[in-house]
Image (tube, rainbow, N blue to C red; front, side, top):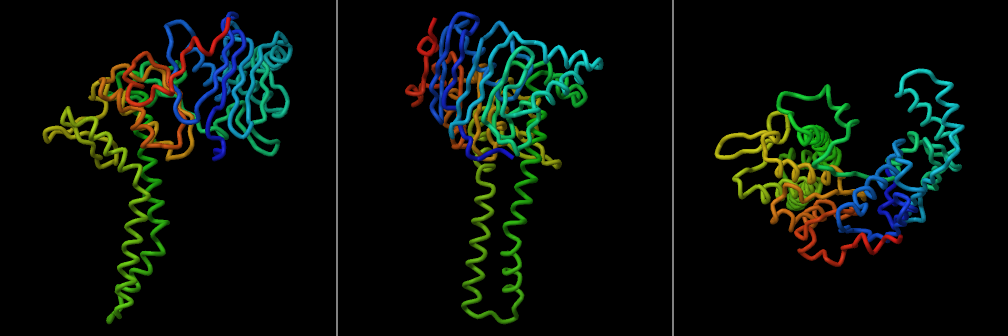
Amino acid sequence: MVDKNITHIVSIKVEKLWDETNINWELDPKVNILIGKNGTGKTTLLNLLEATIIGTLNFNDSEFVSIKLSFNLDKYITVNKTNDSSAFTKILKENKNTQEEHFDLIQKFILSDIKDSKFISGFNMNTNMISEKEDMNGSNFSKVINFSKISTFELSLSDLKQTQNKQSSSIRTELDIVLAQLIDDFKGYQLKLRNLEKDETAVLDEKIKELSSKDTAKKEDLNELRTLIVKKEKKITDIYKQKHEFIKQIDFLFSNSGKKLEFDKENSLIFKKNEKYVTPYHLSSGEKQLLIILLTVILQENKPCIILMDEPEISLHLSWQLDLIDIIQNLNPNCQLIIVTHSPGVFTKGWKDKITKMEDIITE
C-alpha cells in the first residue's frame, strides 16, 4: 500500500558523478525542468534516481560514489559505493543456480535488516523509508513511493523480455510494447471505476427504488426522490471525472487529425476517423508517445506520484509540447514532475520559473 504522505522528492545529492562532479539539487514539489548540454549527466541523474527507488542491482560503480534522495517527512534513501564484496561473494558461492536465483538470494539478504546497511553488489544502502513492521520486496520502495518513469523512445532489455510472450501481430515497435501494457492497465482502471460506482450508489439505488415503487407519492416523497437522483448523478460524475478529463484531452489533442477516442466491445481504446476505426498501434509515433504519457498519468488515479520524463518532446508537435505540463497537471494535480528536456516548447508556456540548469547544481 503506497504511503499517501510520501508525495515528493525534496533533494538529490550525488557525490563524484563519473569521479568528477558533485550534484546538489533542491526540487520543487510540483514541477521540475532540468536543462543542459549533452553529456553533462541529465539522463544519468534520472537513471540513478530510478535505480535508487526501484532497488535495482545494476548500479554502475564508475558512475558515482554516493547518492542520497531526501523526501518529505524527513524520509531518505542513501546508496554508498563500497569495496567490501565479501557478503556478495558468499551469497554467490552458496548458490550455484541461475542468475535469477542469485538475484532472489541477494534481495533476501538485503531485506535481512531493513534499518541497517544492506549490501547491493558493491554498494551499501541505508534508509528510514519503512518501519521494522512493514514488508518490502527486496530494496524496491514502490510500496512506499508511488513512482513512474516515462520513457517513450527507449525500452530496457528487461521490459522487452517481459513482453515477449504478450506480443501480437499489431505490436511491432518498442512504443507498441509500452502501449499494450498501459491499455491493459486502463481496462482494469475502468473496471475499478465501475465497481466503485456500484458500491457508492447501492444505498441510493435502494432508496430510489423504494420511493419509486409507492402507489401514491406525497410531495415530500417526490422531493426526496429528486434529491436522491441528483445526489446519485453527482457521485457518478465525481467517480468518472478524471476519466472524462482524459478523454476530453485526447480528443482535443487529436482533433487536427480528425481522430476521436472510443472504446471497442472489449472496452479497449480505439480511435474513429471518417467512420473508420484505427487501433492505437496504427497511430503515428508522436500520437503513441502522447498516449503513453497521458495513460501513465491517469493510471496513477489522482494519487501523489513522482513522475520522471526524459526528453518527452521527441516526436511531439510544438503545440503539444506547449500544453504538455498543463495537461498532466490537470489529469493529476498531485504528481511531482521531474523532466529532462532540450526543447523550450516544454517550458515556454508559464513554466520558466521551474527550470534548473545542470551547470547550477554541479560542482567540480
